[in-house]
Image (cartoon, rainbow, N blue to C red; front, top):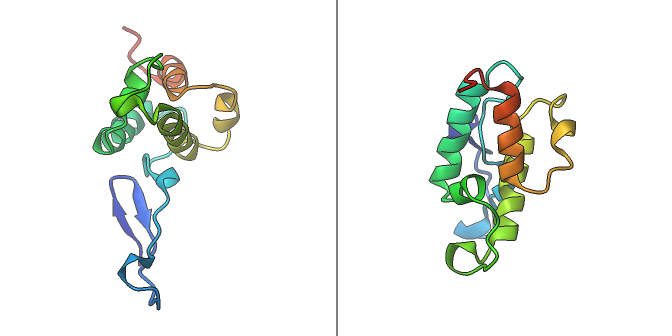
Length: 121
């Protein structure tokens, strides 16, 4: 049996000889349990952003890359890569190749919104 929590799929716990800290959780599998298929942008984007905000990485999508990387921006490059992987893992396989050459999660997010959102305002 698998458990689901805001886009995180966790494997059933297995017995281990390694103690309580043996469960390793990859940050690359967050995002949305709903995959963007080109017709469900509104629900997909809402669920995706709920997860991103919950992991305190919304600045990666909302803001440009900072020139000075201090404070919450100290790990900007790593955080950007993580959010990009969340996006890539939460879209259908026919959409993913169109995203492969973008350099920032913000640019991917903008492209997806412009391409798939029904709200053209």
